[in-house]
Length: 215
Image 1 (cartoon, rainbow, N blue to C red):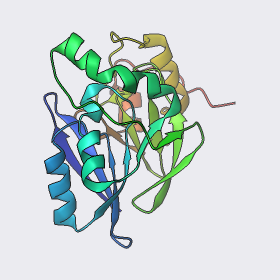
Image 2: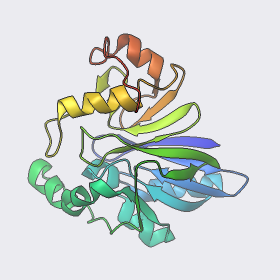
Image 3: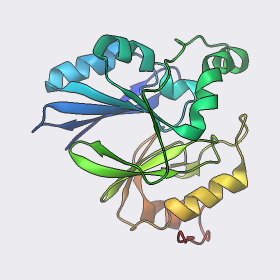
C-alpha cells in the first residue's frame, strides 16, 4: 500500500492518495481542491484512479470531486446520510465563506454502516461518525484509519457549522476511535497524522473520555 498526502485548497485540507502498486490502481480520499495536483501525483506514481471517497461533504473536502470524475470517470462514493450536505455544500461555501467551488456531482454509490471498501488493496470498514457533519464517516483498517474531521492531533472537529453537535462528536470518538488499539495511525483532514494512543493521553478534548464499545 502507498499512502501519499496532498494539502489542497484554501485551508490546507489533507487529500490522501492510497495506491495498490500490484493492481496499478488508487483511491483518493477527500480531494478538496486542485484536481490537477491529484492527477499529477497519480501520473507520477503510475496509478489509475479507481475510486473517489469523501469522509464528509464540506466544501474543503469535495471541491475537486467533479473535475476528477470528469477527468477519470472514477466512481464517487459518499455515506448515505451525508447526501443532503453534499447537495448544499457549494451554496454554503459561498454563503458562509465567500468561496466558489464546482458543484459536486451526485454520488455513484451511497455507503452504509458496516460496508467494506478496498483502499490500496486492503479492506476498510465504513463507520458512521456524526458530530462534525451529520453523515460523516470514517474508514477503519488494520492499524490505520482515515478519520476526516472527527479528530486531529490535539483537537477535534469544529461543531459550530450547520448540522454539527459537540456531544454527538464526542460519542462518535468514544465509540469508534478510542476503541481502536493505541498504535492505530489516524490520517485526518487537517494537520499531521497521529495515533489513538497519543490522542487518548494528550488531547485536551479526549483525556478522561472513556471508550464506549459498540453493542
